[in-house]
Image (cartoon, rainbow, N blue to C red; front, side, top):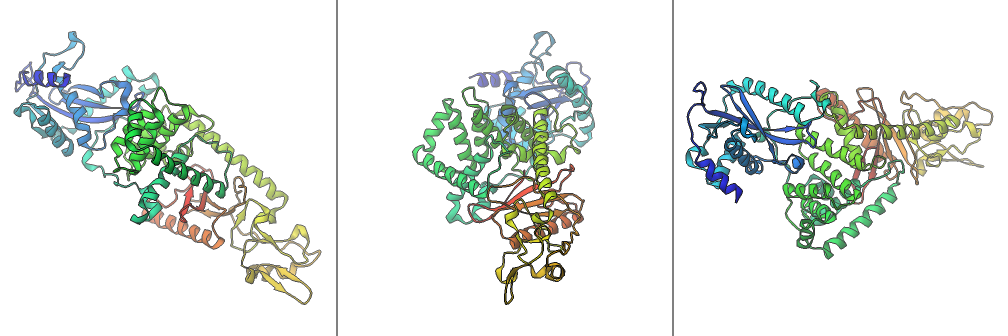
Length: 568
């Protein structure tokens, strides 16, 4: 009813061709911007009269506390809220304070710089019943870009001083550009997480959706990262979650879950959002999924675990577009920080993965990306300390018995976090001098004499043979310039393969399920891609270490039989 009344009033406004002073045309440019220094971050409608440089802005939505509820991915999604804000701006005389407002008037001409937004607002105006001469939206002339930006900088400075904390007044806070919906690539209808699991095999699509739902919900739950699980435990946890999700889908149909969510049930809102994301029992709907995930994240009735999980899922939601627009990056950073606020010592793997592999590499390019995200930065520091402690423990073990945890074959590079993962030479060399080998091919590893059965490595036998006797010195030749520890152990043991990246950084691949040959193949692929990416200045399969911290990447066979990678 209020919108209809506003439309009626707007249609009755006078529409002079010039401003009241007579000096400037009654023409207005508008665009949408995402202001990240607001708490919470919010979109705004920016309006400017280029001739006089008079500018005005409106929060989207009007209630600033609900800023993160509005995140349109298309101009069509943005149009309803934007149209209402435009009408309100002209009806109010550009001020909600009567003493400062202009005499209300309709614009002679409205323009914007995004073709998609231009068409969407025209359609929304028609739907609302705006009179014909006000419906047409023009294209802003490129010649006005400079005056528009200068006007916005003044407005942005006002926003920082009025609505943000004192720290935001720093000149290092980057002003946002207008959103160009025309340039955005729409995310795929079926999430890549689902397609990756089923390899686009439609016969497994439904099971893939359930698996993706289970994996994402597990990865977004609060978790003590210092307590590593071995691959069998992770597999068991995922299978248990898959079974519970299947039971949930059978006992709680979509309509029932939606009803509960709309009634304020945070767990139901999270469940409904996850179903909509993956298309479980419905068509995938990213926009509606985000709406319910936000409901769960900011629910006054939800538990901290539910809210933190919802924030984690939202991190994944914002990370989907490729390439990732800056407002998505900033929004994901906000939600990752919210996770850590709720669970400082047990943030979700999703939050840490995003922080280390998406946010951190951008900190040098976007100087204010971590602005007011100190909780997330602190969590990264704590996790780094945990990893370094685990590395130190492994280093100490290696100092005591250096040969035990690394394959002695020259150039092999395989390491382990448990001595039993490598086999020692069974010859007559002294115990503390024995080389250890990673090979498990029995026909390559045994040599039989008339009196003894020896285990050794054919690859290293030419080197070790003269030393395979009591009292002989150690034969191990370590030519590697990469001396790093595995960074912690798993229950079943693991083997590691350090990779030296073209930029000099190190990535450690760690597995407890892949064969040695398969791990080396994965490592070779990553090295080849890194070299090619550096030559083409593109992004490799795994982002190289940019902070001086050795990265440990888990590489294992997942529940579907496919190789999966997971960072620290």
